[in-house]
Length: 215
Image 1 (cartoon, helix red, strand yellow):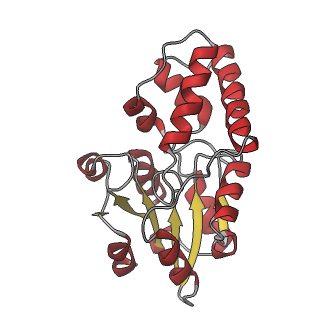
Image 2: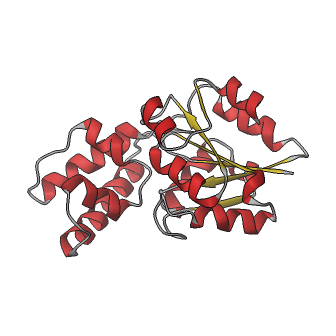
Image 3: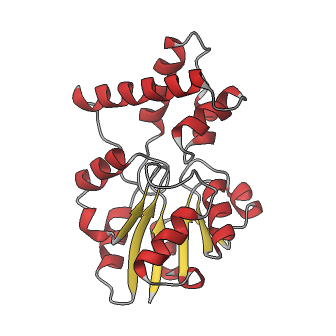
């Protein structure tokens, strides 16, 4: 039996536009210079408070905590005002559905999103039932800490050595390496392929069909 753990943002769905818009509003609210899109992309995957702190190049403090809370408010307003939900990348929904139907594969999600955010995306794309185990920023320390992977392994009863972690960020690759799982990078997200390889990716794939062949 194999466990396959997907990152969410930048791997299953393209969330950069929504995240960046909320970051811009949050930074403006606190008198900070609006971040460039590339800076926002560089922190996608981290737990929100750590992501904002990294963008501002300082430790998490009281203002970072306040900015984190404000970001969540902007994100919820986006949802409540009918903002579009993040689109899935080409081929990902059919791939996940096909893998979920296999008897030799168990699927999970490991993400820096909140539980509420992940649930909204999985429900929107009709993927909730595809995943046996999920861990979010509400459950575990931020990537690249291995807790998300190890807790999913424990819940599924599958060793990390039989687990593949699929993600677009160096944090995903580092987390997989630290947990003893196989790291597989995807090139359609926000992390450069060379950076993923340098962080330990065993493979970097360029479309969903390549993932199917690897698994």
